[in-house]
Structure formats: C-alpha cells, structure tokens
Length: 263
Image (cartoon, rainbow, N blue to C red; front, side, top):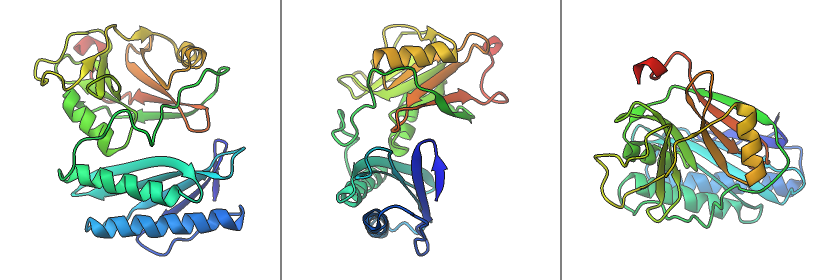
C-alpha cells in the first residue's frame, strides 16, 4: 500500500495472485479481492491474456466508497476504465464498465452513452484546491475523431491533443447533444472532415490563464476541468479535478509537439 494524495491506494497485477497490503477494515480487503475476481472474469470473456493492473482507492471521509481503475491492453491498444461505487457494489460496477468498454473497442457495441450515469462530472464549487499532480505528455497530432476514440478507450472525461488540421493544442470532452465537444486554442470553426452531428464546437477560443488563475477559475465556477492557453509557453493545458477534490494538470512535454512558431 502507498499513499497518493489523500487516498490509500492498492495495486495488483491481475496476471498472478492478487497481493494486497491493505491495512483497512477486513471488509475493504474482501471488496478488493471480489473486484479482482470480477475483472479476471471479464478479461477471460474477451480473450485478453495481457496482464491487467488493478488500482483501488479508498477516499478519505467515506471508507464505504471505492474508486476502481483497471489498465490493460486489447488488440495492442491501451485500455483503461475508472469508476467509483459503494464497497459492496464496486466489483459489479467495475466489471460492467470494463465489459462495455472492451465491447466498444471490438466494434461489437455502440459508442459510449452520454450523459454517463455511472460517471457524473466531478464539478463542484469549492475553495481553491492544490495541484497535486502534474503530468507531461507527448501530445499526439490527430483528428478530433481519433482523439475522441482515445478518450473513450482510456475512459477519460477530457483528452488533450494536437489538432492535426490547425496545429493548435485542443481538447475533446464529453458534452453536448452529440456527446463529444471540441475546443481549440484559437480556431472555433468545425473540422472539415467531421461528419455532421458527430461533435459540437466550443464557441470561444481557450482562455489565456496562468496555472494559478486556471485553478481559481475551475474551483470558483465549479467546473470539472479547464482547457486554457498558458501565456509563457503558449501551449494548451488541461486542468482537471480529481476524485479527492484536488487538481491534476496535463501539459505538453517540452521536447515534443508543435512550437508556437510552427503553428
């Protein structure tokens, strides 16, 4: 067991026996074992032999609610699901979500339903919360449709990428009547290759904010995330609220992506 932010975290490789060092109540350890069994069952159903990683967090102040994350690969593609629920039902919630995600990846089922009853937005007005995680990523240059597919496969609420058509940093996220919305740093015109009705456009360019200003904006207005342009780097950044209420910042790796002069 290790401490991450304010949560106790258990991790286990599902390719072997689950080993836990959980020092919480026995009920919690039993719930983790039950989750592992259900996840294995779903992986076998989809003929996945790759190792999967299970991560279970117990949020402070409510030990009866577990946050479950499963990472694996399906046909060479990274996959992830994340869902929360009462300890007695977390195994069922995780198994059902993993099964639906793998079904969509194989093309056997329809795309993700929006709004998602299992994952309400992490949106609430609060005092300013700290950024407890900063993640540098090599942003992929791709179409919004490809970015939305990655967002679905990784069970993200929003996904930062480089829009191949404009060269701008951009975000896709779950919203609107089509289920997916696109926001770029500057351009607000729809993608030329997009099917009508496949996504909606954010009507305004990204806000120009410092990291601190973005944190204030997110917490003051109760937003699940903020996509913004950071003034010094001129790059798009994605600030998100975590399940524990603190914030995480996703930024473009300095060595990759398009520089402002290349746009």
